[in-house]
Length: 160
Image 1 (cartoon, rainbow, N blue to C red):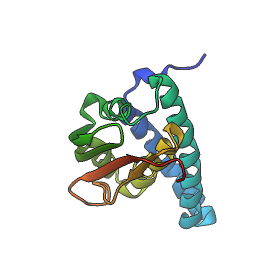
Image 2: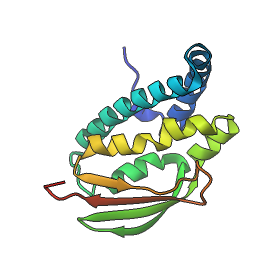
Image 3: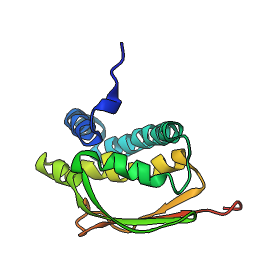
Image 4: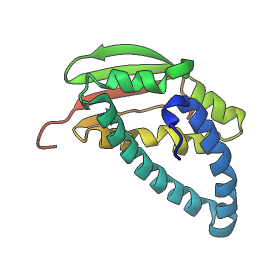
C-alpha cells in the first residue's frame, strides 16, 4: 500500500526529508568526507527533482510558461512562500519570493547548509524535467542570505 503524498504539504515533506537526511549526511561525511557526501546528495536530489518535474508536468497536463503559476502555488501551499509576481506571458514568468518558510524551517533545524541542496538547488533539475525548453535564472536566494529569491523563467529557442 502506498501513501498519497499529495495530501501532505510540500513544506512538511521537506522537513521530514531533512530530519532523515541530515544524520545520514553526517554519518557518510564522517566516513567519506563531507564534501563527497554532499556531492552525492546533490546528484541524488537532482535525479529526484528531474523525475518530480516530469510528474508535475503530467499532473498539470501542460508544461508551458503559463502552467508555472500552478507549480508556484503548489510550492507555496499553506503559506510556505510569499510570492511577488512581476511578469507573466507566453515567453516569460518572473517573480520574487519575499518570504520563504522553507528557509526558515531549515534554519530552525540548524540545517541551512543542507536546505540549499535539499530545496533551492533542486529547482533547476525540476524545471528541466517539467519542460527542457523553460530556462530558470536565479541569482540569489533567501537561503543564502538574500532578502528575496529572484526567479526568472524564459522560453528557450529551438536551437538552445
